[in-house]
Image (cartoon, rainbow, N blue to C red; front, side, top):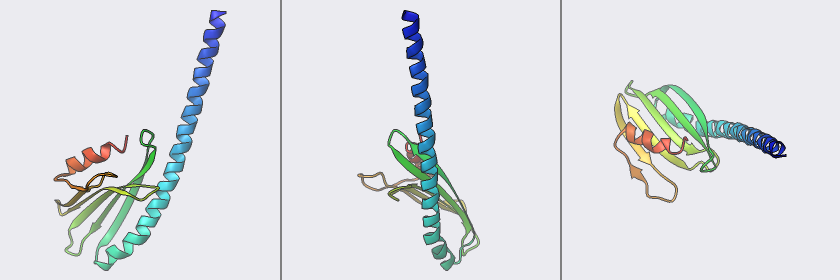
Length: 143
């Protein structure tokens, strides 16, 4: 009888684990779709503004991150371009893909950091001093 109970318990754990994994995969797919929508919206708004300031060779990529602990879907957008002075520039932006709250923004032009802005929700905005500080901050959201 003990063996049957143990076997049933083990089977229930396996089925529960499979359902949890399927739910996580479903949530990840939803997050990826939401991140794509956010990316398209952000690019539609940002690209004309960038062109207006004579930026060229604009290339943008993004990745979605489902943070199950925070129950949030994030988009990390990276954009590279040549500025009007012909210097290579990079922007990296971490945003909530649903609310569009910007959590962090980093800009580099010609190898020199221009902006490092951290905006945790409900807390004061912080200007950071390096890409390492930016990466450490964003890592908390990309778990």
